[in-house]
Length: 471
Image (cartoon, rainbow, N blue to C red; front, side, top):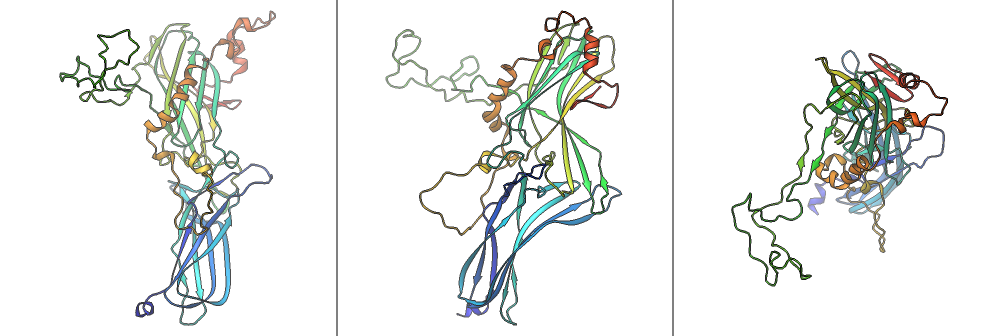
């Protein structure tokens, strides 16, 4: 009884999940807006008359586009939900009040980068009916808004890009990019095909590059465009260790004696052709070794004139500390927009010259949030019993950035290797420049045909369709 006299009421907000997935579309079509659900938990040490309970959802955007630009904070979303109790007396104990907010699909996604942040939170305020009973507020509970270009309940679609270019030094060049789901921290398969350089060249390196561009808009309409930044994709190709499956004693590398055969086992060397089980014991001295990285040689390869070259590698997109998700076209009113170009950079030298040449080919891509995972987007299994509607803690979603490279290779590595091995590389037929693919009336030379299809510049970016080439 005395403890209740010195205790104060408290209020706490819990959310059903700390991530909300919106699906913006770049048109005035009906959208399926997600719903954020939660519970306001009011704890009363004694009987109190409650006037109203108000829950507020707010989204704030802070921007600062670098030196010479001001710091600005604007409101991007605000919703209120008020429950008027009219001074109803509520007994001591814990009382739960559920709430739900509709999040528009055009809501800007959460953002955190060097040029600002977009953050969302929910808080509750309880007003009591009485002069000596001040109102109490809950701590703010943050949640994240993630954009997904796919329809609700679906994973981001598979990425499969291919583009071609005719280089004066390397000849016809084909690029292929594949990914099960092109998200932040995902795996990407990059393929390069050279049908034959005009003159002998040395290929120094092949790298995948993501160029990230920010566009910051202020409240007065002024737009700042900081300098784009390029991120090199890390190669993660690995080959299996010889002891990957079962560690078997190797006398050539291990001086210890192998263990004894299990009771009833038949030695393989004395019974090579009988149907009875024959095996060697698992070694206790030779441990399983992890996969071995496959580094690139330096230089990568030397090509003679007319020699074909095909190269494939598996890379990983940097985590969200470096690469932010692309801003979707339907996200209206966002102050921080992010766009990406996925490029393949080929460094080479011509025979007889020490000058290092660079050919870069790329396409604009949409990189989805690393939170768009199966566990986050798909519904859990149904239960026969109805669960309690009171929410005690949010569902903790996973992020692709927290997965190790080994876990990603175990999940998507085989699919990416198949994309590089089964899919035919870019050839003269797929490029459309083989002589047998032409009609009998075709007489133009290879150079004339390529120049008619591809626009090339000696410096700077030049768009040919949606392909960006820098030479």
